[in-house]
Image 1 (cartoon, rainbow, N blue to C red):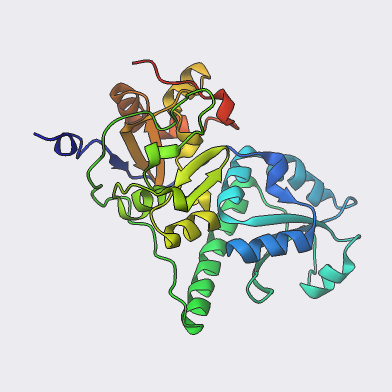
Image 2 (cartoon, rainbow, N blue to C red):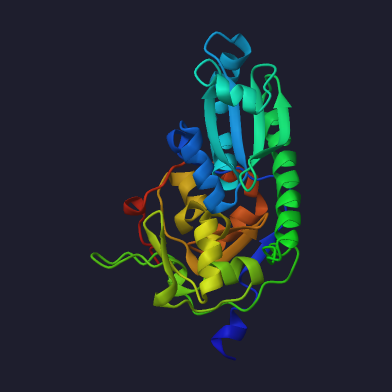
Length: 303
């Protein structure tokens, strides 16, 4: 029996309705509207404008208890380009987006500069995330309609979580730690092909892109374009580190492509089969671990 057949069922999918990640709080919220707008235009992500004021009590409570939460930073980092706006310093933007009360959140389509959804008033974390989730889905509908009207092909949706994964390639660490060598994610396989089509397709050096210190190889120019637009959508969570080991021992240990799992359309890798099974039994326990990892923290797995 060949290796590909033996490993065919090793990459599995775990269904879920909720997922939270870690992110850099300082990098989540932009401070300059025009800079944020340009980035939103380039990435085709919705632009989130959070209007507040220093004198506004509900604004400050939301700032302390909601806007600085790592769970929110994770969500915004994957779905939005977000910017905080002091209404006193930017009355032009207050007028432009018809802000009538504070705090107020405006979700803007960067393609035409028009608001898509208004969220008014102070909210707790759960309510804020729910509102932003609905707003992001609304924006995606608007984006697909605009692309269709312009004659462009809308981006392909990710496969549903219950679809069968494709054959797995040969085993190795997702992040080979060799001093002096560049770190190549997924052993050179395309993260777009894996996440979108559940296929293991070798990438090419001509279509390489660095994300958080890891070089990913894509197999086509279209894959490269999609990855550059939204790398968090395709790259493995936690820089490919084992989420169970990270939670239990606070060590960033590289996972192996032999032991992979899709959880709520997000890709995880583990150092061992036991670790993957432990994750499968209670994924919520491990996805809530709050870490902002850097490549130089990653250790090779001990076999």
